[in-house]
Image (tube, rainbow, N blue to C red; front, side, top):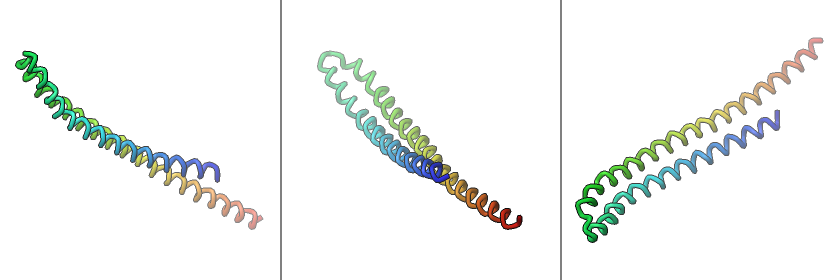
Length: 117
């Protein structure tokens, strides 16, 4: 059971690390999309100098709303995924502790059975 315990410990730590990285990456992606939304509108203003002013004004608001919405959705999805990975790490820790307790109980019962014979 020692190898199984070690594997579960590694799986729990890896799950915690991946959960943290997922949350940080989701936060960075959200900030990038939200700041990119305002920059996209200012980049569309450059096309207004080419005579495409009405077209850029028509596209600016939906593009900005779409980028902000994508940022919010990416953050929510990353929070959900990191929460699930954190739960997986917790479950691996509980399984490891339970496995160690069952091994100790089996050892105690086998010793008790030998003593009774």
